[in-house]
Length: 125
Image (cartoon, rainbow, N blue to C red; front, side):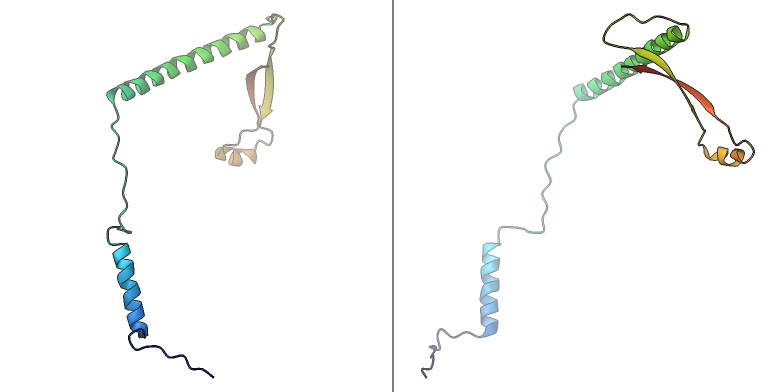
């Protein structure tokens, strides 16, 4: 049986191996900072962006008001018996009856079993 002989210069203790690996790791990662988190530089919010947002909010309010007015006008005319022009779209008033689900009605429900509220919505197809 042949014995494996290691020259004394090559032979290292376990602590020496760990020490060498640690030094190599430090040398490889010396310029890197693994615990430093870099955030992108904050961007400037321009006055133009703010003015644009405010303008859009104002226009949104105007458009919402126009939509409500147009819906109410069509609902009123349909309720009065208006006739629809033939075409791609149809409109009708849809009536739903549903129970109020507010927490107060839980108490009222014990006395009034059939409390309902009427809603009318415009359906455009």
